[in-house]
Length: 163
Image 1 (cartoon, rainbow, N blue to C red):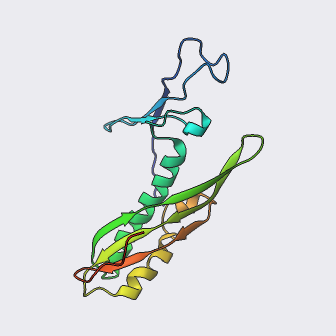
Image 2 (cartoon, one colour):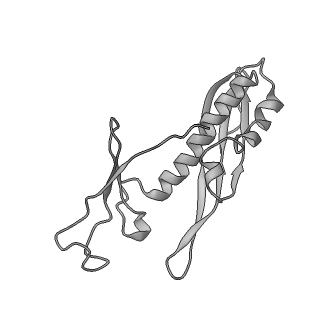
């Protein structure tokens, strides 16, 4: 068994002069950093007094699920002889906030639009999405249900209408 370690630095940049004296006295802005990578300017969701011009944790959660799914799908497809030439996803998530302010994601829906070569197996390329959850590190680490609405387009054929 291999062990992988990940390190980040989260630095709050939102002290507007009086710290956290009240819930409204500070900004939720912060930076997400890792050695050798560009800084991600982050905040809380605007619904929670965050800066709408910055990434929020909920968006990053959704992005990590979609990224992990895509990367595992591409690998599984390659091993299965499916040649993917393009991949795009428009994931969505539904988060429920309780009366006391706590909450959780109720569901995530991935909407991959995958383009494959004509010599690839269309049915297999669709079904491989169901196997990704067995491998994706993020999906295996959370208890939020992840749904898939997959569209596969065969290169050279008229694509289905976009939604």
